Amino acid sequence: MHYLFESQSPVLAQQTLGSVETLSFSGLGLTPIDCAVLSHVIRLCDTIKDLDLESCHIQCEGLQRLGPALHKCQCLRLGDNDLGDSGVKLASAALRHPDCKIHTLRLERVGLTDSGAEDLVSALSTNHTVTWLDLSGNKLGNSGVKLVSAALRNPDCKIQRLRLMDVGLTDSGAEDLVSALSTNHTVTLLWLSGNKLGDSGVKLVSAALTNPDCKIQRLWLMDVGLTDSGAEDLVSTLSTNRSLTGLYLTDNSLTDRCVPALRQLILNLPRLEQIKLEGNKFSATGEKKLRSLQERRPGLSVDM
Image (cartoon, rainbow, N blue to C red; front, side, top):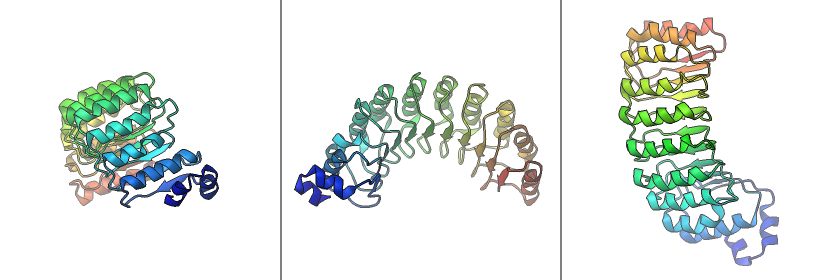
């Protein structure tokens, strides 16, 4: 690519890369000069759709060099780079480009905070191409998730997959997210694992799934502090849901006490295909009772 850059020949660049659709540099250290070269090449080739730059040690200067080309990619992976709020602001500029094609934006563990989320959300309010947004592992807190929730309320929002794992969300902040999900009918996959929701937060989240227009098909609630009491509330809340196909409750504090409630939940959810319960505190008898439901529901997977 450095050679193509030095040649300054668009024809040569297009002939060399041919019909390449994916460029993956994941795990390789890229200097600001590398980023400038990469940007130049992407601008010359209209075939590149997927750009994977995860763990490339890219910081603000490198992202600034990449900026002019980012809007051309459909899938943009920038996770595990030390971008900080200012770097995410640069990435957000690509979303505002009138010819933006980005539909997948991966920004997990990039040092984004609640104050930096404002620029991203502002860009998302005008962008109608993003369908998959990953902000996991950033210190958003309740205030940052509140900003993201505002983007979900936009009637033109197209986000279908939303990953907010380990972002510092608590039960008190879950209210804003649930409120947004009650009006948003595009989200089908929702990851909330690793947040301290507790029973009260999970109850709020599950309330969003009672809306008959809710499209959420898979819900990740792993390691969120859920107990038997919360699981019983979950059963009560989800009893009318008709969209859920996957429920992931791994690494919580569930015991045999909630086995009857979970059995009822599994049998009541008509479209459920998979429920994950590893890392809880069930006895061998409790696990057996839950696994036995697979015999009554062909196609159902109960993972213990």
